[in-house]
Structure formats: C-alpha cells, structure tokens
Image (cartoon, rainbow, N blue to C red):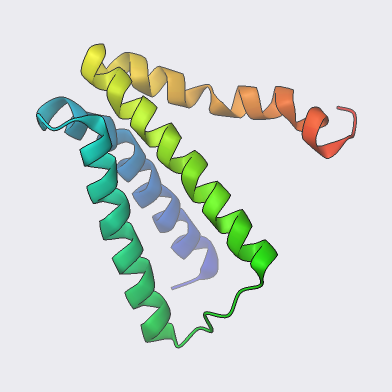
Length: 117
C-alpha cells in the first residue's frame, strides 16, 4: 500500500474511533473514571504488545519518562472530563467541545512556543 493511501486509512480509522468514543460513555452505565481506566489499560497492553512484536527498544531517559507520564496524566484528565460531560449532557455537545481543540491549541501556542502568529 502506498504511504499516502495508508495515511488516509489511518486518519479515517482514527476519526472513526474518536467520533464513536462518546457514544460508549452514553451507553455504558459505568462511571467515567472506570471507563477511562479500562480504555487506557487496553491501549497500554496493545501498545506494549506492538512494541514487543516490532522489537523496539524500551530504554527511556528520566526526562522522557517524566514527559510520558505527564502526557498520560493530561490525556487521562481529558478523557475523564469528556466522558463525564457526555454522561451529563449529550454526545453532540461533547463532540462539539472536542472539535474546538484546534482553536484552543492555535490560541495557546504562542504562550508555550514563545513565538508570534
């Protein structure tokens, strides 16, 4: 498969996964923290198996490990609040809120990257 076609397939699968995720929050009667814990556990196991199959090195520096832990924590908070908002309101409102992420990233980038638009 060509790289471009493969990238399109990966993009569409990612969009499908992201757009259907809030529906599970509405359908499954678990608390949002339990849903996220199970999702992140499954993803961690699958990523570990993928790295084992690819025979990728697991060596990380302390700085890389701290960055991964911080990113994982922020991702966990994001998903918990998203799923909690779906359970309180509707999936449409939650998807709309997630869809505004690029706007906030664009507005906050100069603060973190120390550059102008």
